[in-house]
Image 1 (cartoon, each protein chain N blue to C red):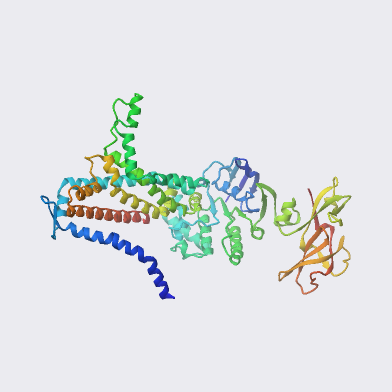
Image 2: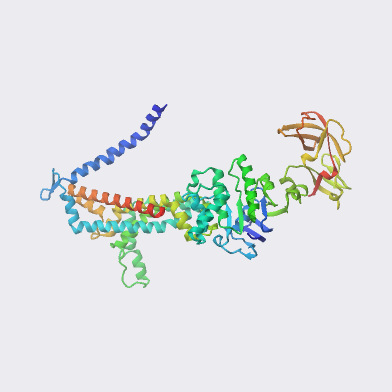
Length: 352
Length: 284
């Protein structure tokens, strides 16, 4: 395994920048996830690391050596594709052996490593089967075994779980993550599924429109989002739009709200206030001891089992979502008058 | 339910089956019976008999075995060249993301809109000794005497390639299109350079299309009539013109029938042999 450095990578198609100026470093043994909506450039970035796409500018360094101009077959990067891309005419063992044969290893060594790799993904004894005789989850594990067998410098995962059903996906997440830790694999995964990203990553990279918005741990992204895009993309949030002036936030609907002093510096101006639904409190009457306490009307309730989402209108222009745990206590109904409250520190202001 | 399904299947298969029985199998059976009859040359009449004399005549006369040899040689050559030229073309058409893809496909099929004889006639105009090609090169002083293109084996080979290439490309393209692009990338990422990837992944996966294309191409070349007749000239002999000659010029139906059956048997057995060989090669 080795560290991976991406330096000022650019991919331009005509006037369109698929990736503009992306720099990232992945430490030896680290699991980095590129997260973003489709078309954000995450897959293009991964494919430039694999060598399938030639960058317009920038460098890719693997274990300190510059591989930017090397073709994929000279890179020693193990890749797991979204479609798995198993060779349908070869058996499971032949699939896993493919990369080892390319490295001209002696037959005995190839057989030994194939067996090891299959055991690693709990598919020992499946070597003689053809890919089409396996379930989706098993095919996925063969793809993983095939990528691991070559002992790659870096493991690249391109939406590897998106073709599995929801239940299996949760199991495989944990499985891949444990394997990655056990083997100390330097790994880059691309996904648009944030739950998947949050479960598996050491660090995450949030991308949009070809640029990196923020790099950090799960906690960094959720608690201290760098900008409005990250706040909206990672986790759920309600945005109230308004203006910042004199240490207060005034919504377009005319509400005067207390916000954390750190976010109100500088000149007055347009801004958005981000409020996470689970950081808000809701009660039938006034709530004491909070910086903000506002009356409102319940407009919509969605019952999700363990939790309940309550949409509350605070003013003609301001509506927000409050999430409460379903502990069998207070459960407001549509049309009911309620109070919503939160600490100033629960909100985050983003200047526009 | 089951019964009505059986009826539906019969109704769907029936017309085509009847057509093949009446239009193909019956005439073949009759022709085969004719090929065992004998022929009186003086009166140009067929005499009822049960003899394999016609088949013996064919295989003992170098004129006819020569025609068979030429036919097989030309057909093999044409097929190999079509495969070599057709694969890259088919690959590009199958993998292109261009919005002009359908135009590419039309461009490949377009030559088929012109009949073989019309096309061969066109070739005669262009490649004759006094044709456009030689006249231009001689007029420019590049040649002092014309290049013999017309009425050579090469002219026939080039002509049949031009006719058959679209069939090869279309057979290959549809199969290549069904191969996930990611398996090629997977081979690359596992360390296979392009040629190895082709040999180990693309070729075996495209094999059904390769077989379909080569079989189609080979059968068409074995049975080519207009192209060898018009471009090969009077001295060049391939099987289809020879058969035609027996039927129409000599009205020797028994011998014509025998040659037709020999052509069919040779085509069929070579096709099956090549098929088996290709499959074995890939399995190994």
